[in-house]
Length: 389
Ligand code: RFL
Ligand code: PHB
Picture (cartoon, rainbow, N blue to C red):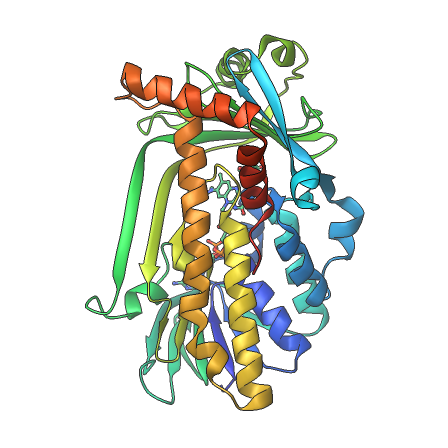
C-alpha cells in the first residue's frame, strides 16, 4: 500500500493530524496498536486551550465540543483553608474549555469514519524503515499477517511508550527527564462537581484536584505514593482523604458516590530533542511528557500538530520544505515553556517527601504572592489558557 503520510498511533495527536491533512487533500493512514474501544476507555485530559478548539474547528470536528464543552473563565487555588481565584478571561481575554479527551477522540474517530479515513487497529510489530532517506516505509503485522506502507513521511504519534522515538538513533537523540516522587490517584464518579470551576488544592496531606466532565460527571485526583495501587484505595478512603485536603467549606458540599474508574498515573517531565529525524517527525507524548498539573499534555500535543500540519501543507501545496525544516525548533520552543509551567505549578502544589521547613515556607510564600499579586496571576493565566502558537 502507498500513502503520503503514515501516522503511527491513533490517539488524539494522530487522529487530529490525519483529519487536518484530509481537509487539505493530503492522504494518510493511521496505525493503532489497540482497538478503538480500548483507546476510548482511557480517561485522561479534561481541559482544552482555545488553540486546541480552533484546530478542532479547522478539522471540522468541533460541533459537539461547542454544544457540550463548558467554558471556564478561571480556576480556584486553595492552600489549607485559604482559597482564591485566578481569572483567565480578565487577564487574557480567553477562557479554557472543559471537554474530555475521551470525547475529543470519539469526535475525531467519528469524523475519520464519515470520510472513509484509513485506520488500521490492533497492529503489531511496527517498524519504521529508511526515515533518513527519501523513500521511507513502515512494516507491521495484523493478525500475524505482514503488511507494508510506502510513504513520503512518517509521523510518530504513538505516545511515550511507542516505537517512533526509539527509531531515532541514540547518538542523535538527547533526552531530558525529571521524575516526581509521587503519583496521582484519579477517580471518575457520576456525581455533580463540587464547584463550578476547578479547584487545585495544596494541603499538608498532599495535593488534590477537583475537576469535572459535565454537570453529572466529576473527576477528582489526590496525590498518592508511587507504591500505591488503585486496589489499595476503597472509594470511601478516597473521599475521606479528598475531604481532608480541600477547604472545609468546600468539603461540606462534596457529593460522593461510587467510582466508575480509578487509576494511578506517575508524574514525569520528559523532552526528547530533536523532534525530527529525516522524514520522521514526532508529535505529542511520543516526544514529551508533562506532569498533569496545569493540563498541558494534550494541549502541547495539539500545538505540535499545528506546526507539523502547516509544514506538510507548505510541502504539498507550495513545494517548500521551510515549514517541515523549522518544525522541530518551533515545536520545542513552545514545548519547553509548557514544561516550565507544568513543573512550576507541580512544584508549587505538591507535598514532597523530603521537603524541609524552609522549602515549605518558600511554597507558602509563593502561593501567597500568587494570591495577592496581579502580575503573578496574569502570568499564570497566560500560561494556563495557552501561550500563542
Ligand atoms: P496518546 O494518547 O498516548 O496516544 C498514542 C497512541 O499510540 C498508540 N501506540 C501505538 N500504535 C501503533 N504502534 C505502536 N507501537 C504504538 N505504541 C503506542 C497507543 O495505543 C495510543 O492510542 O498520545 P497523544 O496522541 O500524543 O496524546 C497525548 C495525550 O494523551 C496526553 O498528553 C494527555 O492525556 C495528558 N493529560 C492531560 N493533558 C491535557 O492537555 N489536559 C489535561 O487535563 C490532562 N490531564 C493527562 C491528564 C494525562 C493523564 N495521564 C493518565 C497520563 C490527566 C492524566 C491522569
Ligand atoms: C482532568 O479533568 O482530568 C484534569 C484537569 C486539570 C488538570 C489535570 C487533569 O490539570
